[in-house]
Image (tube, rainbow, N blue to C red; front, side, top):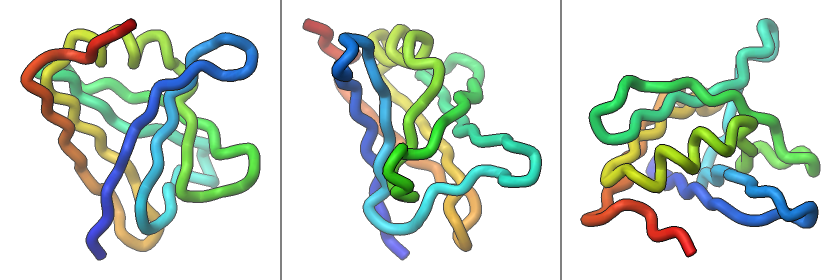
Amino acid sequence: GECSLTYTIRKNAKGNNDVYLHISSGQFMGNQITGDNYITVRFDDLPASKYSFSNSSDGSSDYIFLNNTKDFIAKAKQAKEIKIEVTLFNEGNKLFRFSSPQPLVWE
């Protein structure tokens, strides 16, 4: 089916930055057997990087939280294009592209 992905950077209650992803339809899936819960991200022409994630604390399968937020945010600040590949239940891997004429504006 048709679905969209959003990523959000926010400050949490402790004052730290969170990066979470939301899928409009479907369910994020990690490898339950090996514990390989990760997504693959490519910023501009940099090599692809794997980012591990944690499931939402309320059990929602349409949200995941990245574990290495500092690295993701540092690269997102400079990138004009971000490609994120996620694994979805019963749908396999899906690639989403985010493009901007200028890098992320950080205030």
